[in-house]
Image (tube, rainbow, N blue to C red; front, side, top):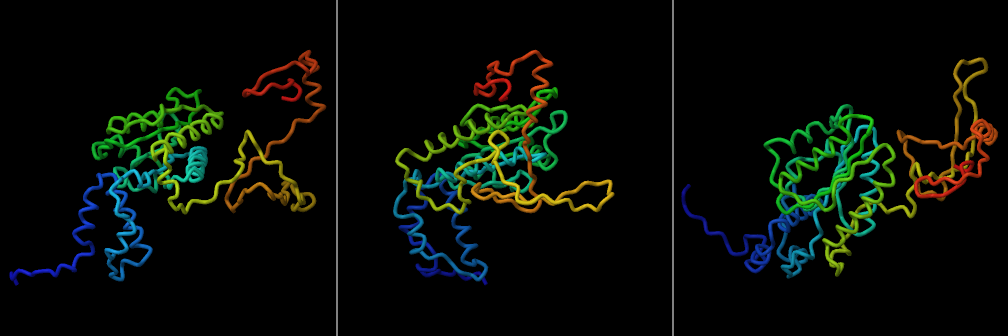
Amino acid sequence: MNDKVNFPANALPLDADMLGRVQQFDSKALYWLSGYCSGLADAKGHATGEVASSDSLQQLVGGSTNSSSIELKTVVLYASQSGNAEKVAQLLYSKLSGAGVDAQLASVADFKTKELKQQQVILMVASTHGEGEPPDDAIDFHEFVLGKRAPKLDGVKYAVLSLGDSSYEFFCQTGKDFDQAFSKLGAEALLERVDCDLDYEEQAESWSNNLVEKISDLKGADGSTSNAKSTAPLVQSQTWSKEKPFAATILANQKITGQGSVKHINHIEISLEGSGIQYLPGDSLGVWAKNDREVVSRILDVAGLSGEEPITFKNESRSIKQA
């Protein structure tokens, strides 16, 4: 039972030359390589006992020990109560994908905390619930990163966008907590934390654009990783929002409650042709109606205004009547 067993030289999936190349990668590159190989194994059915060959790994390593040719392991996390933080995170994820950054998008409720230390870039969008509390789904993750079990994040880059309501005392507190926690764990901020009030769209888009530029710089100006294959969804040419709503056409509007019913329910069909929007069951729909011209005129008369007075709203100049 204690006899020494001599394994043949070809028993290992890597030859000595390949092992030498792999060992020259730094720790972050090795973490990425581990996750990449794990994904390949899942795709090829590692449960059947298949072992990666030296030839197949040669294609992965490519004979180069330059870690700059490896895609940054990037995760976009969101802690959302009403869905706003999730929407911003999805916007950022789409922009990153369009720039060739192969990122992961996840709610903190679904993200495995043990994978946090494996990331090279952590991007967090967090809303604050109630009096400075994290969203319900984010409580466990919030406690983890602020607790003693959180891993060191030396060498990791991060950025935080906070959503909140300035009428509350602890404005954007959850985002502030995440920012302080990541910094305390040794991570370096790519951008200063941005705290957004109820009108967050413009700040969120600017923050997302700045991050895409920063991460593209991290990848290298030579674009060595820009050809990395991404399974992310295609980016829409136009991102519609509350500030830039899509002008849809009403195809049908039919009352479906019976005559004399106290309820008034309509079946409405809306054309999204040309918008690029994919509407699924369970999604919410916001409708921005125009003010009645007669009501606008009456309000202006009561206020003693002609309606031609110029105003500036969100960097756009227009007459008060148009606004």
